[in-house]
Length: 192
Image (cartoon, rainbow, N blue to C red; front, side, top):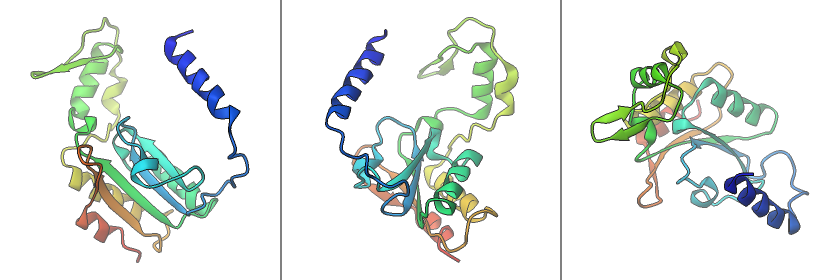
């Protein structure tokens, strides 16, 4: 077994030994969802004041409004009663460090982990790679405010999203821990 696997299983044993959350209902108690990035520096429970059972937290690379993220948000309200949604991107996001073309080229060279330095990304692995990466929109980010606004707008305009759900747009500052409102996103997410 790997050291990480052992650490996770050991932590789970300690958690389960005093577990007392089995009574929590399926729907989130505070009736809201957060769409945010998978970045390990973000802890939505801490920056959003959440406890188990409070809210749905949907995470992906960049916190983007991908088809799957919207699928989760639709399930969240339609079957589990959430009534407000947050889209929260963050400063210093890895999704700002590459483009669709760079990712496609790296994957075309090999499927191993790439490296980055001052001159950019480098594939250090042995091939073969796959050209399939060139056909994926990786939803990279050039500007945080713009990406939050795009995502809130995409969610707001989706045919399966009710117009009465408020959608809030923020950027989490990884240096200060503060949520910074994106006014254009907030305007785009107002209930209609």
